[in-house]
Length: 304
Image 1 (cartoon, rainbow, N blue to C red):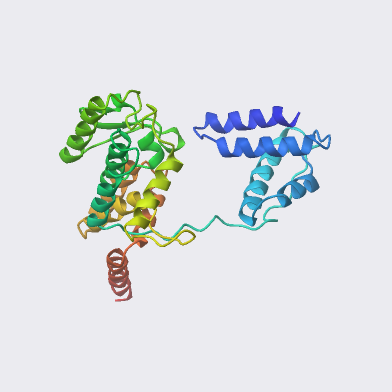
Image 2: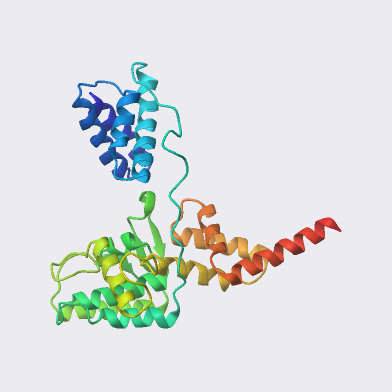
């Protein structure tokens, strides 16, 4: 019974363009737990008990918020479903990790080190070399880059078909980036690497994104850019962050130009809202200094 409601609930969200895979998995776990006690409706105490089995406070809060939102949906159709009060397991999102701005020479060093990734003599080292280069040059999400197909490289750029929230967009490429991708395709042909995915390993499929993260962190540690296991530091996602920050730093110091640039960058990065793009303004002392100067000027103008 609960699974039937969950299927309709997930289908509703997916019809709005959301993937909703994590929430679907989590709700199925809740249904299995609750139905083990014979529940046919959501029950507040059962939701509490299920959340208390979590491995951490963060997971408990994610479970609770997901189950509560589903309870609201179910109760709208059947008052027999109970809805727990909001915020029982805490509020707020998980804090974003502190980003690292990666310098151009560091990017080059990581790309060079990737050529030594095993197994040598195969396409895999070249895959990581060119994958990391593409992320640095375009600011793509790792999931978007790994979902690229060979025919997504077109005359006008790269077609990103599997963006966040199911959005599709066209990424313009610098001539040097296009030449690099064409060189990689030639290496694929030389190594007889098959498969429709643009970036492939010896199995003919794109590497899993977890594997890409592991390889990147391992290389960063090897080069001294990140501390030992258990310490925070340079991450694969910082390539996207660095791309956005450097793009904003290069923008002319004119309010109208910045507004146009932010709107364009938001579309380029595939953000659902331009508000997500404004977060990058906090990333470097250069940007913060410019914001502070503009704010002071605006204040003085209003105070005069």
